[in-house]
Image 1 (cartoon, rainbow over the protein chains, first blue to last red):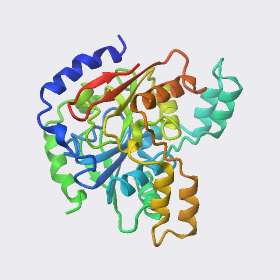
Image 2 (spheres, rainbow over the protein chains, first blue to last red; image 1 turned 120 degrees about the vertical axis):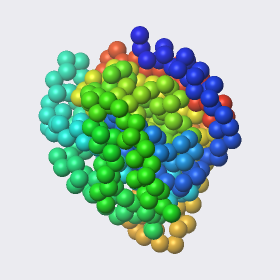
Image 3 (tube, rainbow over the protein chains, first blue to last red; image 1 turned 90 degrees about the horizontal axis):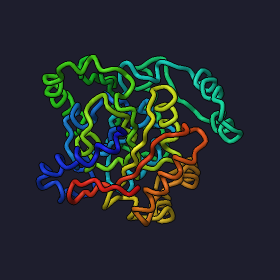
Length: 171
Length: 171
């Protein structure tokens, strides 16, 4: 069964214990945005001790800043008042396992890709990395250097260890 | 105190109850990617009944597909085997509260924006929306129509009600 068919029943349980969360305001109470990988094993709430209402959760393949997260962070800061960014990448990341060239070849090998698909894959930036600590430093520096990120924004970087659940500070 | 200073203590608690999660494999066990808004009030694990290891969590301002999530979904499908996408937008979304023109004027009003900042804000797509249900339909359709999304991908769309915790099906 597709996961879609499970959501109703799963969500009923959540609603039962929802409590007074319905009155939480729109702006994150801790004024923080977490930028992390989409990885299935990283729970950006539980592992960092965040509750509903505390922080923005921006997630993409690798937890990269550019190009996926620029729009989100600008909206987070300008319209919803966050002033801190925590970047979280993680061990055993899929982004460490391939190169853009190999990924492009894989996709170009599809039978039914078509002309549009070929164009799309040629211009897609995969943004993989080969050094995990360096990828965190790169994204922290890219955020600090971006002309639309507010001056004085506190930006730090961490690595989540999928083997232990530990979050280790990089910078 | 910045949130960064709280992470160590918060994470210690998570590690204590980590159990056997360290052996979870990289590919999501439910073969699903959840594409949702970054909103602080939406816990994409608890509200949908997802545990660590089950699904990719792709999140950005509004839960939009293009341009922020194309790269992530392609990697999720091609390299990590997901075959279903669940789009989740939500009530009281910040994306319903502004227009791109107003957001650009707000940012252009900064004292210290500089030449580069002005260029960046002129080309930034904010991707706001004025009709919540339609925004979900738009993103579901955009995913289905994209030439790099695999044929046969199950795509459905939902709205999370921040007032009640309920997840309502749109399509």
